[in-house]
Length: 108
Ligand SMILES: [Zn+2]
Image (cartoon, rainbow, N blue to C red; front, side):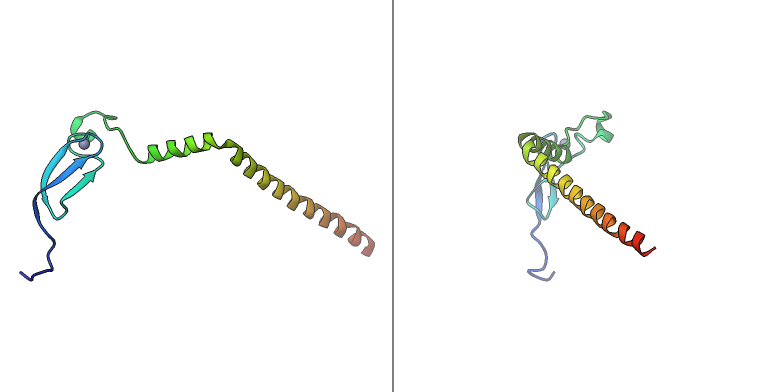
């Protein structure tokens, strides 16, 4: 075996499940790692459809929701400015149309 090429091997590496807290000792090259789901809490093993407390997308969404509730004034201002910009653009286009329309009428 070539030296300094192979990763360090741990006969009993620690794997912790973040959903149920179960700890497994498995052979591996990483000493400690975490998993979001394991055989102790996965629905296919437990037989319960919603037995897992999911952490990830739901938590991120709830954080965003809380942040939005804490600062609703800023969002409202941004929306208003966007609407105002659109209204300004439309007003400019209307002006251009009004300006062009009489010219065409004069030409004809
Ligand atoms: Zn688990």
